[in-house]
Length: 165
Image (cartoon, rainbow, N blue to C red; front, side):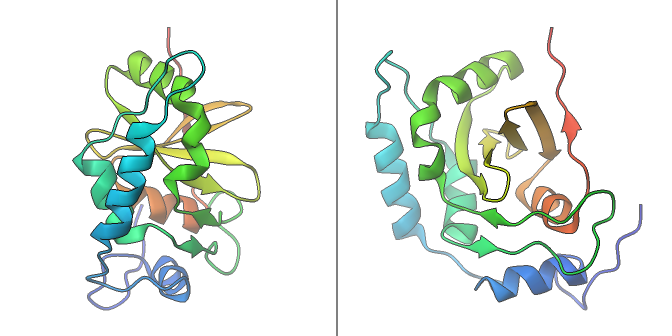
């Protein structure tokens, strides 16, 4: 599927506009905030003893996009309504077991990434940089990296349901 790109940016026009409206710009990098989140997540332990995984792909995503409340792209989505995203890993702080279970099923580490505020779906990223959403209906694959996941979610591309046996 071909998606029109805005000049030399790395995102499609509508997604680029939504990201910039939220305060993102090329080169944005807040490693101090990302390290704060990493420390908070590492320090958290659920009542059942579950802990969060923290790894470079997550910290890099938080450093570039963390703290943004990104509106969905304007207009209709490609397949579903465009999704607004809050990039804040602490929104998944109390789901260490959920993310740990997903990580075990996928044979990778999973860390919180943020939330889709309208639906309450939580976003997660794995050690390879792949992005997932977790909601009351199941687990979903949003994209192979943060750029393509944001493009899909903000642009209204339906994520793929994960089926694990």
